[in-house]
Length: 118
Image 1: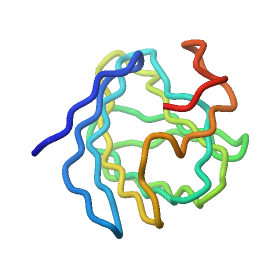
Image 2: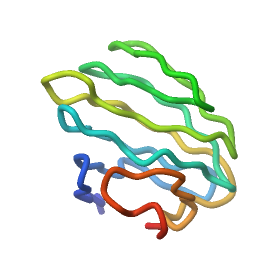
Image 3: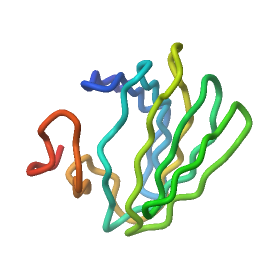
Image 4: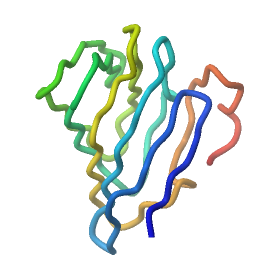
C-alpha cells in the first residue's frame, strides 16, 4: 500500500518501509520549504532527482542539482527548500530505529507548526 501525504510545502510518497529503513519521494513546490528540523532516531540521505534543492544543514546553506546528494546525520538541524520555479524532487532514505512522523522536532516553520510535531 502506497502512502501519499500532502503538506503545506508540497507532498511526499512512501515508496518502501521496513523496520530498518524508510524511502520517500519528496516533492517541494516552487518557493516553498520544509521546517528547519531535526530527528532523534533517524539519519537521512537525500538524492536530488529534478529541480534545485536548497539545503540548510546545521546553519550552512548549499544548492543541490539533479544527481547531487546530501547526508543528514541523526540529530542534525536541517531543511530542504525549493528556490526555483518548477517542483524540486528528491528521494529520501531514512535509516535508524524509528521512522514515525512524530520524530520531528521543528525548530522553525513557515506554516506555524514549530510548536507541534507531525
